[in-house]
Amino acid sequence: EKFSPAVVNITTSTVLAQGAGPSPIVPEGSPFEDFFRQFRERNENGDRPRRTSALGSGFVISEDGYVVTNNHVIESADEIIIEFYSGEELEAKVIGTDPKTDIAL
Image 1 (cartoon, rainbow, N blue to C red):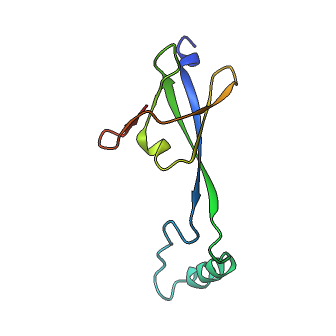
Image 2: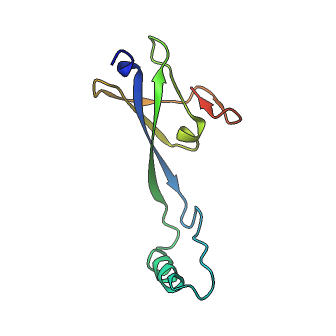
Image 3: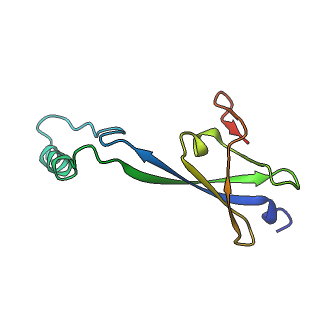
C-alpha cells in the first residue's frame, strides 16, 4: 500500500490503417481456413482506418508527474491517458524513449 499511489495505469489508443497488423497463418486444408477467409472478407470496409487500444502500467518518479513505463506500451500511440491511484485521469505526452531497453518517460 505504501507504493500504490506511485503506480499508474496507462491506456493508449492508435489509429491503424485498414489491413494493418498481422494476419493469421492457417495451414492449407485446415478447418479454420474458411473461417478466417470469411472473417477477412466481412471486415474489408475499403480503406477505413480503425482505432485500437492497449493497456499498460508505469510508475510516477517525480513530484512534477514524470512517469516511467515500457516503450512497447506507448510506442506508436496517438493518445496516452494516465490513471492515478486516486482515479484521476490525465493526458500524457512522451518525453523520450529507448527502444533497446524498452523504457519510456
